[in-house]
Amino acid sequence: MKRSAALLLAIALCGAALLATLQHFAAPRIEQQRQAAAERALLDLLPAGSYDNRPLQHPIALPAGGLLGNARAELGYLASLNGQPSAVLLPVTGKGYEGPIRLLVAITPDGQLLASKVLQQQETPGLADLLAPNRAAWLHGFAGKTLHDDTASWTLRADQGQVDQIAGATITSRAVTDALQRALRFFDAERQRLLEARP
Image 1 (cartoon, rainbow, N blue to C red):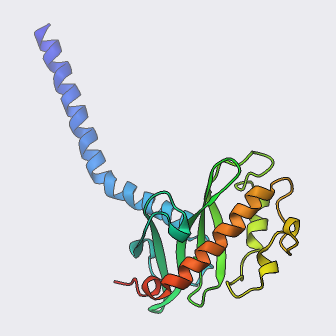
Image 2 (cartoon, rainbow, N blue to C red):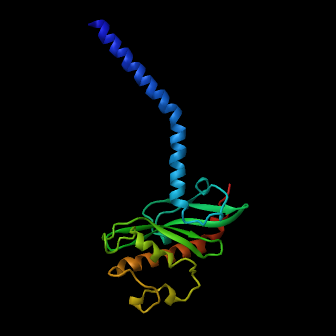
Image 3 (spheres, rainbow, N blue to C red):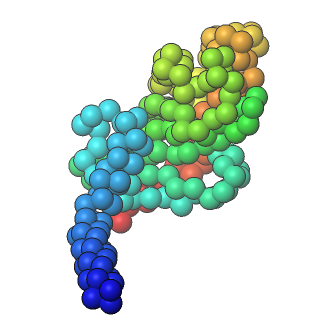
């Protein structure tokens, strides 16, 4: 009986040691794959060939609150091509109908909105859900806009402007347009610091 218990204990210890060894050798690869997935998710805003660095390895510390409206300190990222800045990625938060709307925006060095996407939101599914595939096209409509564009080009049609709002989701639409403009204002105010955030 003691011999069987000792044998089972030895097998269990060998199994645990084997698992620990496998985990030790697999951990770097798992972490590398996790970082690659995170990078793909964040960098899909940037056109292919528009950067040749690893932007996630060049984080920019951003404060909580202020123009970006983030609840806590966040990180932005600098993309560069041939050693020159090509885009800055900034997280920005808007106040949606159901709660915060977290966006990631890519801005060119001359202050043009390159692209934007929703990272997190709680808007009504089927009505104002910004993560729905058909909402991405609405967000694409802001690409190319700058702070220097006339007010009407940033204002919803519901407010006598030129921007189509999401049907049945005017508050959500206003929150997003406001957040995008605030991100551009933050970039404009912090341009030098953001573009010089290189190692």
